[in-house]
Length: 169
Image (cartoon, rainbow, N blue to C red):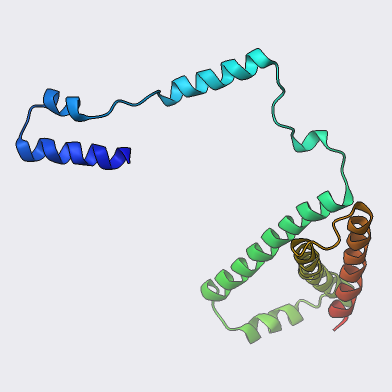
């Protein structure tokens, strides 16, 4: 609303070719500045001796909290991995088969290959199973404390089992 009023006053000044002093008379003054608002906020909080908002460091670590943080981290890692893979496919010369041949020529041991596959697949499986758990929360199911911990353990067990199975393929 204030922007529209300011625009109208500016247009009026341009059209009428009035002096700047007459234009200022048409503009509505602001109540307070941001600096005054900030000073008032901090003086009020200092006078009331209230603590700042609780930070993550004061909470004890719980399984649901850590799984939620790891869910965000796995999503970021998966997004970064897909983005880097896509960029490398665009920027690096050659095709996919030539890159597979390069990996085969490195003669990496089966243990290293299985570990790498397990690391990639475990991120995907954790994010998938935990995402389903979050969808259950959105439906309002499993929100009691005991159910939260049980579902968390189920997600971790399903993650390990499905990751082991997919990495073995």
